[in-house]
Image (cartoon, rainbow, N blue to C red; front, side, top):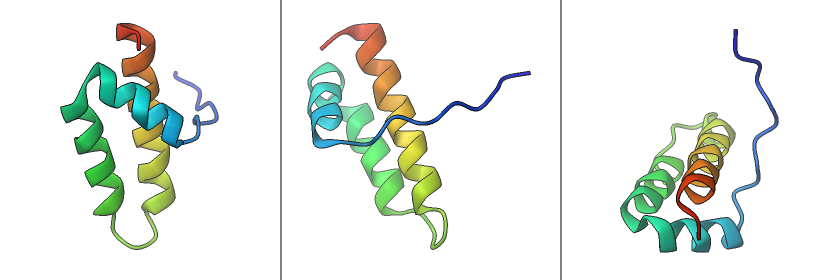
Length: 61
């Protein structure tokens, strides 16, 4: 079973690096945060940060 680790922060630096690697994925992740239903913003922010961190780690920036 996968254990839940603390999510990285969704910082401007991470967004800039991710946008350099894959701008469309970055836009999608940020849209998901912006359109999150009330009460789910933090969860979507964590998810976006994990996704963008994975992209940066796998594809370099």
